[in-house]
Amino acid sequence: MKILDGKKLSEEIKNEIAQEVAGIKDAGGKIPHLAAVLIGHNPASESYVRSKVRSCDQVGFESTLIRKDDSITEEELLEIIHELNTSEDVDGFIVQLPLPKHIDEVKVTLAIDPKKDVDGFHPVNFGRMAQGLPCYLPATPYGILQMIERYGIETSGKHVVVVGRSNIVGTPMSILLSRKAKTGNATVTLTHSRTKDLAAEVSRADIVIAAIGIPNFISADMIKEGAVIIDVGINRVEDETRKRGYRLVGDVDFDGVSEKASYVTPVPGGVGPMTVTSLLMNTLKSSRKEIYG
Ligand code: GUN
Image 1 (cartoon, rainbow, N blue to C red):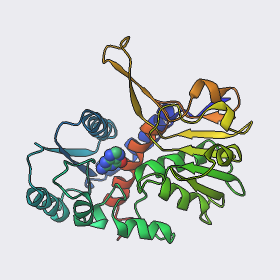
Image 2: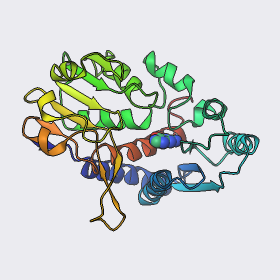
Image 3: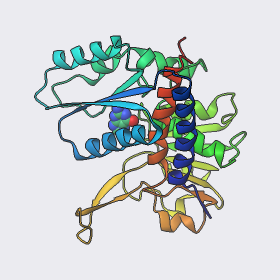
Image 4: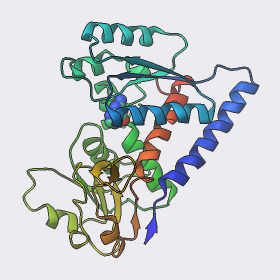
């Protein structure tokens, strides 16, 4: 079994981006600028946003963090989005989800200019993705594609089983891997909570993408010998032996599947770091006006 080392791969990609940024600087060009909007004090969101800002510093991007209390009104948030949409300086921005209950996430997503939607969440980018048109790919699926491609894992003609149908991971992943494209041409089964015999579906997969948010859900007895296992889950489970009082585990029983799989992503250090580099790549594309001119 080989580890799909997202931490190492993301460092390599960040080095490549840093070199590009150095080139832009030398040529006197505009430094790519990512902004992040963080509402409230959700610990997981705070940790993700911190990692996004730190990664910007690492590659030489400019970054702006806009923090607001969760008493912010929807109108106030929409006004911030309007300012970011029209800012000459900001190339791309994200509004970290989830948002407080009194704010409509769909309305917020729709308010973001697709040209600056480096998360790839706006339906314009989603629709363009589905039709194979230039777009910002959503960060997690984009990171998984990079990982599959850079590790030389064949997808053409393979059977992929995606577990979970969220708008930001499962559904786009199933579309991307079935495309007629370099990392695509797979036959994809998208499974979810109403799938009848989920274990039987997973057992047929050459590649499993687990994105359901249930700790250790995919076990060794469910997978085929030699399967590639991509674990998107980041679940906090209580652990008194840790200083923080919890540890992070994926949707996959890592130790169990390691006995049978050909490749496995660890948690942490697998898909997570790749997601952040995808956001940087989308921001670089935006600053170069690669997608929308
Ligand atoms: N919440 C969990 N993942 C993400 C992400 O990729 N982007 C944003 N904006 N919010 C998230």
